[in-house]
Image (cartoon, rainbow, N blue to C red; front, side, top):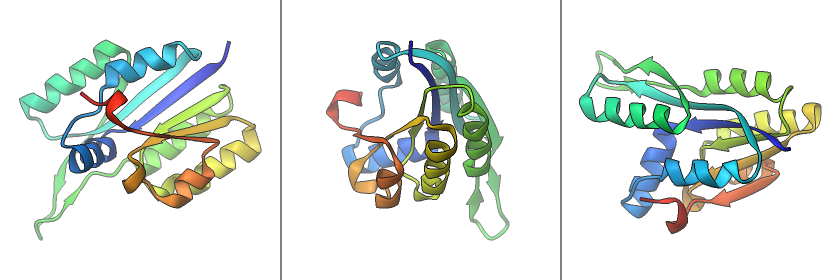
Length: 157
């Protein structure tokens, strides 16, 4: 059976689906779809912890579905800008997981991950699938993926 590792850039998926469709991603439906394609060995969702009740409920829902939720604190800088980036953490986890699974699935449109996908495909011979909002996914990431899945009505609430 195909072994699968899933990595979700929660902020990226939240903002791209909201800005494009005005709707949220349906994680439960996504999970059900993937369970028919293989055995989910790892499922990490990377989010920013702001401490509000709505986010806590969402994170609890992700855990209930089967995701391991990894949190970083939300940092507000003195100049008003904010920081909360999981790119390095996602990269490290994908590099580790790619050694032990057949398929790595990344939910993100961030082009910073293109080199990572090229590396794991070449070095570990894994299938690298990407789910993202087509209009807001970097072309370099789409090209680096073995398969690109455009998020559309089928995977939205």
